[in-house]
Image 1 (cartoon, helix red, strand yellow):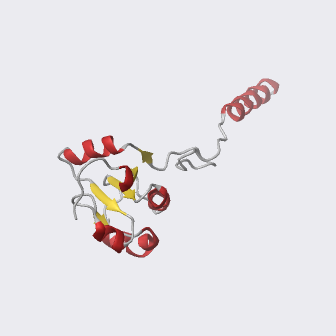
Image 2 (cartoon, helix red, strand yellow):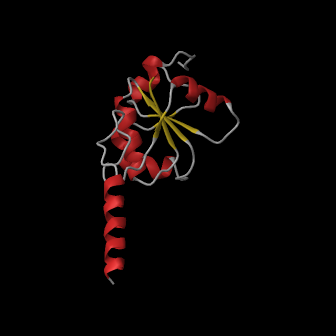
Image 3 (cartoon, one colour):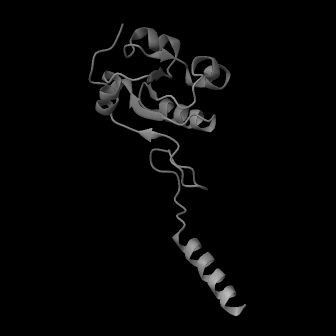
Length: 139
């Protein structure tokens, strides 16, 4: 019985010592309690490559309607980040579909990516803002 106690004690001790308790990553994409990556941050170049491949990815613009009308990435769907809670299920019914998220500078897209993850979406790739998008946009 004493051996079992020490075995359990060391197993718990080693597990506790190995558990990482990192704060959110600088990109805000980690869950502190579980250390689960909620979304993947990628570059504009990586996003463009994914957009050019034949797959069923959604390009999600989370800016305002006015910003979207000024210019957006080709085939992007507009869903302002402050309306995600109310409208996401009608616009994005498949929770495992790849979603490429962007905004103007990268702030709202990170917030939107976290919000989508909290709503159960599992394949989110955030690539910052259109200000850093070196490719053509639709006007």
